[in-house]
Image (cartoon, rainbow, N blue to C red; front, top):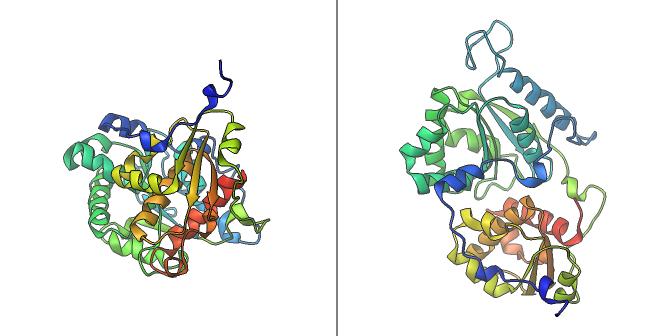
Length: 338
């Protein structure tokens, strides 16, 4: 029997998963890497006091879940706690960790998902059934609230409005919208404008800081000299695909299903990586990288370094923040840093 067969890599392009509404709901929990996230194990950078202040503000927000006194939206004589909280900041400052920590600490039935997972749920179940399903939840956490798709943004604003009216509390982080190049500094005002009917319900927290994945290093994405050999050394299921074929496959699968594409994998191998020339392909790849990072799937690749695949015109354009977040995550996934 060949010793190589048990570890022979599969192919991403052979994975075309479906995802039912019930399966989507079951996925609405923090990613595996944040399964134990808490306010106590968040590592604030002492050079940026806003990070410690954010922890204190979230503790205050959690106090709003206390019983008695007229419920979640009561205005007590003490300082009122608004039913929504928004985390505004650059990539790598720990917004998702804090959002997951809030989810873990909050009582009751609660949901945690990315913006795209919630919009996909509406697509699978229909708007009315999605509202009926989520109504009555104590907390709805929305990571990576997309501000660059007006239709979906208004859909989510409407959904949040109905849930807020029924007593659900909300917490969100978001991406910078197109042409807002402030690395998060314009995200808050755009988020609140897009959910104008809900804006007064949100406390906005600005979290400054450096990307925690790169605080102590100027690392770059690792380029493999032999992708197949590196994959053979990985313990667990792996895949191996030419980069152009991966991109073509991602175009055929809805981004909400990328989570299932990477499910159970220990590593993905990519050969023939090249710089992007098509922004649509680049944005799909960013969504794919997000799911790889959530599942902590190692990436092994040759060709162009993965932190150099986004050309200057893309890095200076409206999706700059998304690309920089992806670069940060690709460096971590190719080098094995946390």
